[in-house]
Image (cartoon, rainbow, N blue to C red):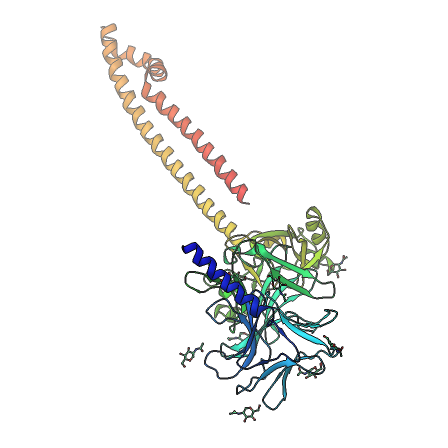
Amino acid sequence: MRLHRKRNLLYVLCCFCLNLGVAIDTITSSQSIKDPGNIVSNGSVFKLGFFSPVNSTNRYIGIWYSNISVCTVVWVANRETPLNDSSGVLTISEGGNLVVLDGKKVILWSSNVTNSVANSSAQLLDSGNLVLQEKTTGTIIWESFQLPCNKVQLTSWQSPSDPSIGSFSFNIQPLNLPQAFIWKYGSPYWRSGPWNKRTFIGIPSEDYQFQDGFSLINDQEGTFSLSFTYVTDLFLHFALNTNGNIEQRFWDYEKEDWEVSLLSQTECDFYGKCGAFGSCDSQNTPICSCLQGFEPKNTKEWNRGNWTSGCVRRTQLQCERVKTGSEGSKMDGFLKLNMMKVPDFADWSRALEADCRQQCFDNCSCIAYAYYTGIGCMSWTGSLIDAQKFSSAGVDLYIRLADSDLVTKQDMKKIVTITVIIGTVLILICTYLLWRWIAKHKARKKKEKEILLLNRGEAHKTFPSDNLNQVKVQELPLFNFEKLASATNNFHLSNKLGQGGFGSVYKVMVALLKFYYQIL
Ligand SMILES: *[C@@H]1O[C@H](CO)[C@@H](O)[C@H](O)[C@H]1NC(C)=O
Ligand SMILES: *[C@@H]1O[C@H](CO)[C@@H](O)[C@H](O)[C@H]1NC(C)=O
Ligand SMILES: *[C@@H]1O[C@H](CO)[C@@H](O)[C@H](O)[C@H]1NC(C)=O
Ligand SMILES: *[C@@H]1O[C@H](CO)[C@@H](O)[C@H](O)[C@H]1NC(C)=O
Ligand SMILES: *[C@@H]1O[C@H](CO)[C@@H](O)[C@H](O)[C@H]1NC(C)=O
Ligand SMILES: *[C@@H]1O[C@H](CO)[C@@H](O)[C@H](O)[C@H]1NC(C)=O
Ligand SMILES: *[C@@H]1O[C@H](CO)[C@@H](O)[C@H](O)[C@H]1NC(C)=O
Ligand SMILES: *[C@@H]1O[C@H](CO)[C@@H](O)[C@H](O)[C@H]1NC(C)=O
């Protein structure tokens, strides 16, 4: 019975879709949308029509999800030119452009394609894309997904009640190493790190649960587009919010609302937070520190928590010193920093993993390198900006340092600690040995006395003569030695203990030295 009802319902729904969907997912010159009308995509996924944002009476043309209760707008046409009444119309102009007109037939917004064709129509697809195409040939002349300008970018709303262009924008930098950026008034605000053909490696994996659905497509005309598809039945989308953060929104079918997670979550995600040659670690206080071998450019500022000036190199590189003619000492080396977000402005080369280091070493302008599967050999010149230390994943970054700067502070700490431990152990051993020696010495004296007494007794027995004292005195050294050497367990044992002790000390020392060298 229940099953039957469900089927009936489905049937009714489908009829509804078919009846309306086929006819009304398209706008033509004769079929326009008047406020408050809207059209629905064929599969009823999206709607296109007039809406007002929260706390606003302005009217906008937008696209939103049609199958959920929460109004979620994904695209707005007349962002900068809202209507202040309900006289608006969305239609196809005589020139074939998609236009928004007000009550006086003034064009408020236009798809603005110069080579538009007279016979065109606009269709709303189930993907959320609004496509303007020529009726007869089907040639696409405009689409809402890809505005016809050089740079495809998302821009944030001014506020939740004002869709006009806000402070933030998002795009993909089309270089050898494509990176995603959020910009604030034209300055970098957030950076994803390079694309490794699967994901952006500068986003900590624990914050980024669905790395694997993305694909970055290069259309070979300098335009990259990022898209995602999942095999699973997840219903989600990404949006750049008004605070310049990317929201990953999943539909929670039970709560019937979006569950939002933010892509950047820590202070360290602000681009260049710690300045040049600084490294940001959100687990530390303060979050900023200079990379090893570098010191604050302006210590006062730095200690006040203004890290913008960054850090400078402590010791000039040997390869630089050679250039300027001064005596070169030991060669420069590379220090490995693990679990890093790689700095910005990486150069990419075809070098294999084995050659990446050497290639960097051979060129004094190369100050760091990293090799990452899926990307290859990256190297840096000039400055290291926007580096971050992650608590998991990340990249092994190798920075070039003068030999004297290669020993890390941590190593210094370890060395000091170990020296103190070894010293303490040695002192303890010496004290112990001294104590043993004193104890032994006392014991020997005591034994000697006992033996003396014993000998006296024995002598008394063996030689019951009057020359007792004389015999005793003569025989004592020999007798004493024999007795002590073979019979007196106590003496022997202590000696052995002493040896054993030395053996242990020796072993401890070897172990400590091994440890010491391993650290170095
Ligand atoms: C609408 O979708 C159905 C199947 O989902 C398809 O058969 C039909 O051709 C579509 N109509 C249009 C106008 O695209
Ligand atoms: C809308 O206005 C109300 C009352 O002024 C306010 O409490 C609410 O936060 C506003 N909503 C948004 C999304 O701005
Ligand atoms: C609505 O906007 C028009 C211009 O588009 C303006 O002339 C008119 O005064 C506005 N009306 C109100 C009530 O703000
Ligand atoms: C259409 O494009 C031209 C030049 O590209 C520009 O000057 C004009 O402001 C645009 N019009 C609209 C309504 O966007
Ligand atoms: C537009 O298409 C209709 C048929 O769909 C046709 O009758 C008309 O001549 C076409 N107009 C132009 C200018 O091509
Ligand atoms: C809305 O439609 C999309 C696309 O078909 C689907 O993935 C999603 O589950 C639907 N949402 C709800 C709440 O049914
Ligand atoms: C931080 O230092 C920079 C450079 O000296 C300066 O321009 C900026 O105003 C300082 N910022 C703050 C918040 O003090
Ligand atoms: C060293 O690297 C810099 C920057 O990448 C480059 O301009 C220069 O030609 C390189 N020098 C040599 C000798 O390869």
